[in-house]
Length: 194
Image 1 (tube, one colour):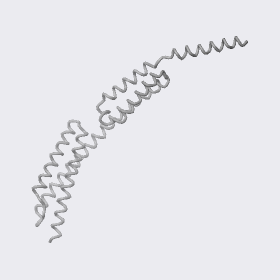
Image 2 (spheres, one colour):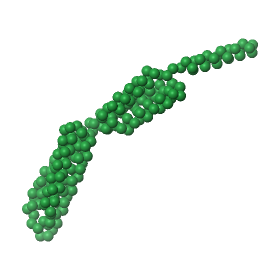
Image 3 (cartoon, helix red, strand yellow):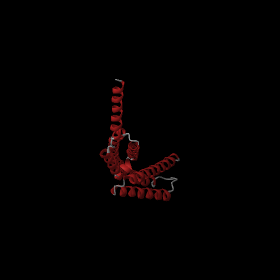
Image 4 (spheres, helix red, strand yellow):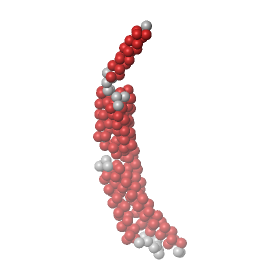
């Protein structure tokens, strides 16, 4: 009886060894995960607007490879599926980021154009104020520089370079707001002197 149960135990152990040694890596899933990450890494929007999501996909791919090398194929398969989801998410976040950047650039340029009109009117009004202490030459030079920056932002926007358009749009808006504040302060100071 003992001999018979030892034989059965031996057969079961041998079967388990054979079963686990025959386990194969989830090649199709792993290749799909590699392709998904490569596609995401080649996507301009994902690189520009979703770098963190792209990094998560690449990190997941690295973990998948580590699990496959350690012959933990179930983990590798699960990570392959997760990697594909993360790569797709990076592309989706990149596209959403592009839309947000388009909207932000358009908003900054529109508000910048509105500020140009305000500064123009304020500057023309300031010229009529008696005893105003305002360096019109300097303010006009700053104004022209801000308008040039705004025009560059608009050019970047038309070339779909939204990150630069946003950066220049912010710079122009800040400069225009500062000029407006300078003019307003000078007008108020001159009005108090009367």
